Image 1 (spheres, rainbow, N blue to C red):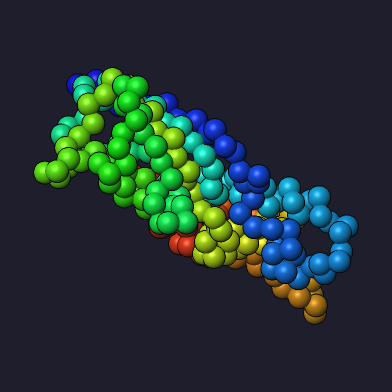
Image 2 (tube, rainbow, N blue to C red):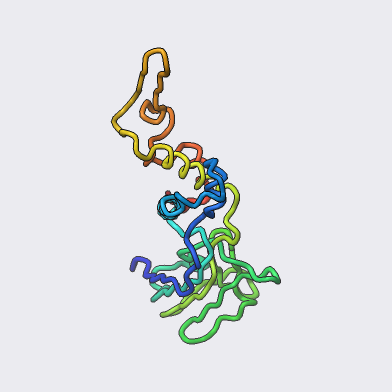
Length: 217
Protein backbone atom coordinates (compact mmCIF):
# COMPACT_ATOMS: atom_id res chain seq x y z
CA UNK A 1 0.00 0.00 0.00
CA UNK A 2 1.26 3.47 -0.89
CA UNK A 3 1.54 5.77 2.13
CA UNK A 4 -0.67 8.83 2.42
CA UNK A 5 0.23 11.62 -0.01
CA UNK A 6 -0.90 15.03 1.18
CA UNK A 7 0.41 18.56 0.74
CA UNK A 8 -1.05 21.29 2.94
CA UNK A 9 -0.42 25.01 2.62
CA UNK A 10 -1.78 28.23 4.06
CA UNK A 11 -3.50 30.40 1.45
CA UNK A 12 -5.15 33.05 3.65
CA UNK A 13 -2.94 33.82 6.66
CA UNK A 14 -4.45 35.21 9.85
CA UNK A 15 -3.77 38.85 10.67
CA UNK A 16 -2.01 37.65 13.82
CA UNK A 17 -1.02 34.31 15.30
CA UNK A 18 -1.23 35.67 18.85
CA UNK A 19 -3.72 33.85 21.07
CA UNK A 20 -4.19 36.77 23.48
CA UNK A 21 -4.04 40.53 23.15
CA UNK A 22 -1.64 42.95 24.79
CA UNK A 23 -4.44 44.29 26.98
CA UNK A 24 -5.36 40.78 28.16
CA UNK A 25 -1.73 40.10 29.04
CA UNK A 26 -1.42 43.35 30.97
CA UNK A 27 -4.54 42.57 32.96
CA UNK A 28 -3.23 39.11 33.84
CA UNK A 29 0.16 40.50 34.87
CA UNK A 30 -1.21 43.46 36.80
CA UNK A 31 0.34 46.02 34.45
CA UNK A 32 -1.40 49.37 34.05
CA UNK A 33 -2.96 49.46 30.54
CA UNK A 34 -1.60 52.98 30.15
CA UNK A 35 1.96 51.78 30.80
CA UNK A 36 3.54 51.18 27.40
CA UNK A 37 7.13 50.93 28.60
CA UNK A 38 7.15 47.12 28.40
CA UNK A 39 4.89 46.64 25.39
CA UNK A 40 7.63 45.41 23.05
CA UNK A 41 8.91 42.80 25.51
CA UNK A 42 5.40 41.72 26.42
CA UNK A 43 4.33 41.36 22.78
CA UNK A 44 7.41 39.26 22.10
CA UNK A 45 6.44 36.96 24.98
CA UNK A 46 2.86 36.72 23.67
CA UNK A 47 4.12 35.75 20.22
CA UNK A 48 6.55 33.17 21.64
CA UNK A 49 3.97 31.53 23.89
CA UNK A 50 1.39 31.49 21.09
CA UNK A 51 3.84 29.84 18.71
CA UNK A 52 4.73 27.26 21.37
CA UNK A 53 1.06 26.43 21.92
CA UNK A 54 0.45 25.98 18.19
CA UNK A 55 3.39 23.57 18.08
CA UNK A 56 2.29 21.78 21.24
CA UNK A 57 -1.17 21.17 19.78
CA UNK A 58 0.35 20.32 16.35
CA UNK A 59 -2.12 22.49 14.50
CA UNK A 60 -2.91 26.18 14.20
CA UNK A 61 -5.65 27.37 16.56
CA UNK A 62 -6.37 30.78 15.01
CA UNK A 63 -8.55 30.79 11.91
CA UNK A 64 -6.87 30.75 8.50
CA UNK A 65 -7.56 29.60 4.95
CA UNK A 66 -5.87 26.42 3.69
CA UNK A 67 -5.48 24.22 0.64
CA UNK A 68 -4.84 20.51 1.08
CA UNK A 69 -4.03 18.33 -1.93
CA UNK A 70 -4.25 14.53 -2.00
CA UNK A 71 -2.95 12.26 -4.77
CA UNK A 72 -3.76 8.68 -5.73
CA UNK A 73 -6.14 8.24 -2.80
CA UNK A 74 -7.53 5.05 -4.36
CA UNK A 75 -4.14 3.46 -3.57
CA UNK A 76 -4.13 4.20 0.15
CA UNK A 77 -7.71 4.89 1.26
CA UNK A 78 -10.34 2.28 2.02
CA UNK A 79 -14.03 2.58 1.14
CA UNK A 80 -15.81 4.95 3.50
CA UNK A 81 -12.62 6.49 4.87
CA UNK A 82 -12.70 10.30 5.20
CA UNK A 83 -10.25 12.84 3.89
CA UNK A 84 -8.48 14.05 7.01
CA UNK A 85 -7.68 17.73 6.65
CA UNK A 86 -4.43 18.97 8.16
CA UNK A 87 -6.14 21.74 10.14
CA UNK A 88 -9.29 21.78 12.25
CA UNK A 89 -11.97 22.60 13.25
CA UNK A 90 -13.52 23.48 9.90
CA UNK A 91 -15.04 26.96 10.08
CA UNK A 92 -18.75 27.47 9.47
CA UNK A 93 -20.48 30.22 7.50
CA UNK A 94 -23.43 32.31 8.73
CA UNK A 95 -25.84 29.57 7.65
CA UNK A 96 -24.00 26.92 9.65
CA UNK A 97 -22.47 25.25 6.60
CA UNK A 98 -18.78 24.26 6.56
CA UNK A 99 -16.53 26.60 4.60
CA UNK A 100 -15.02 23.98 2.34
CA UNK A 101 -14.88 23.15 -1.35
CA UNK A 102 -13.58 19.96 -2.94
CA UNK A 103 -12.37 19.41 -6.49
CA UNK A 104 -11.77 15.79 -7.50
CA UNK A 105 -9.96 15.16 -10.78
CA UNK A 106 -10.96 18.59 -12.04
CA UNK A 107 -14.64 18.29 -11.07
CA UNK A 108 -16.18 20.22 -8.20
CA UNK A 109 -17.74 17.85 -5.68
CA UNK A 110 -21.42 18.45 -4.93
CA UNK A 111 -21.70 19.73 -1.32
CA UNK A 112 -24.85 17.61 -0.96
CA UNK A 113 -22.67 14.51 -1.18
CA UNK A 114 -20.08 15.62 1.34
CA UNK A 115 -20.49 15.14 5.06
CA UNK A 116 -18.14 17.02 7.35
CA UNK A 117 -17.02 16.18 10.85
CA UNK A 118 -16.09 19.80 11.45
CA UNK A 119 -14.52 19.31 14.89
CA UNK A 120 -12.01 16.76 13.59
CA UNK A 121 -11.65 18.17 10.08
CA UNK A 122 -12.84 15.00 8.33
CA UNK A 123 -14.69 14.94 5.02
CA UNK A 124 -16.77 11.97 3.91
CA UNK A 125 -17.84 11.34 0.33
CA UNK A 126 -21.32 9.82 0.35
CA UNK A 127 -24.03 8.66 -2.02
CA UNK A 128 -27.67 7.79 -1.55
CA UNK A 129 -26.68 4.62 0.28
CA UNK A 130 -24.41 6.35 2.78
CA UNK A 131 -20.63 6.53 3.07
CA UNK A 132 -18.91 5.73 -0.20
CA UNK A 133 -15.35 6.99 -0.47
CA UNK A 134 -12.82 9.08 -2.34
CA UNK A 135 -11.19 7.69 -5.46
CA UNK A 136 -9.57 10.64 -7.26
CA UNK A 137 -6.05 10.82 -8.60
CA UNK A 138 -5.90 14.45 -7.43
CA UNK A 139 -8.22 15.93 -4.81
CA UNK A 140 -7.91 19.58 -3.82
CA UNK A 141 -9.67 20.90 -0.73
CA UNK A 142 -9.93 24.61 0.00
CA UNK A 143 -11.22 25.40 3.46
CA UNK A 144 -11.19 27.68 6.47
CA UNK A 145 -10.13 26.18 9.79
CA UNK A 146 -9.35 27.30 13.30
CA UNK A 147 -11.12 29.31 15.98
CA UNK A 148 -12.57 32.80 15.73
CA UNK A 149 -12.67 33.90 18.46
CA UNK A 150 -9.98 31.94 20.26
CA UNK A 151 -11.66 29.81 22.97
CA UNK A 152 -11.50 31.09 26.55
CA UNK A 153 -9.66 28.01 27.84
CA UNK A 154 -6.97 28.37 25.18
CA UNK A 155 -6.53 32.02 26.15
CA UNK A 156 -6.37 31.01 29.81
CA UNK A 157 -3.61 28.51 28.99
CA UNK A 158 -1.69 31.14 27.04
CA UNK A 159 -1.96 33.64 29.89
CA UNK A 160 -0.86 31.07 32.48
CA UNK A 161 2.21 30.15 30.45
CA UNK A 162 2.92 33.81 29.71
CA UNK A 163 2.73 34.69 33.41
CA UNK A 164 5.17 31.90 34.32
CA UNK A 165 7.64 33.10 31.69
CA UNK A 166 7.23 36.77 32.56
CA UNK A 167 8.00 36.40 36.24
CA UNK A 168 10.77 33.87 35.61
CA UNK A 169 12.59 36.22 33.24
CA UNK A 170 15.91 37.39 34.60
CA UNK A 171 16.25 34.92 37.47
CA UNK A 172 18.91 32.26 37.59
CA UNK A 173 17.31 29.01 36.27
CA UNK A 174 19.77 27.01 38.38
CA UNK A 175 18.61 28.69 41.60
CA UNK A 176 16.41 26.38 43.67
CA UNK A 177 15.94 28.51 46.76
CA UNK A 178 16.92 31.81 48.26
CA UNK A 179 17.08 32.72 51.92
CA UNK A 180 17.66 36.19 53.38
CA UNK A 181 17.96 35.88 57.19
CA UNK A 182 15.12 37.56 59.09
CA UNK A 183 13.60 38.77 55.81
CA UNK A 184 12.41 36.03 53.45
CA UNK A 185 12.89 32.48 52.26
CA UNK A 186 11.86 31.60 48.71
CA UNK A 187 11.69 28.18 47.02
CA UNK A 188 10.87 28.15 43.32
CA UNK A 189 8.24 25.43 42.99
CA UNK A 190 8.94 24.75 39.33
CA UNK A 191 12.51 23.76 40.11
CA UNK A 192 11.35 21.39 42.83
CA UNK A 193 9.03 19.51 40.51
CA UNK A 194 5.73 20.95 41.72
CA UNK A 195 5.19 23.57 39.06
CA UNK A 196 7.19 24.95 36.18
CA UNK A 197 10.19 26.99 35.26
CA UNK A 198 9.78 29.83 32.82
CA UNK A 199 10.36 27.61 29.80
CA UNK A 200 8.30 24.48 30.41
CA UNK A 201 4.56 24.44 29.87
CA UNK A 202 2.77 24.81 33.24
CA UNK A 203 0.69 21.78 34.26
CA UNK A 204 -2.49 23.86 34.38
CA UNK A 205 -1.93 25.16 30.85
CA UNK A 206 -1.16 21.64 29.63
CA UNK A 207 -4.46 20.37 31.05
CA UNK A 208 -6.40 23.21 29.43
CA UNK A 209 -4.85 22.48 26.04
CA UNK A 210 -5.36 18.71 26.17
CA UNK A 211 -8.65 18.75 24.18
CA UNK A 212 -7.00 20.75 21.39
CA UNK A 213 -4.08 18.44 20.67
CA UNK A 214 -3.99 16.25 17.59
CA UNK A 215 -5.60 12.85 18.36
CA UNK A 216 -2.37 10.88 18.04
CA UNK A 217 -0.37 13.05 20.46
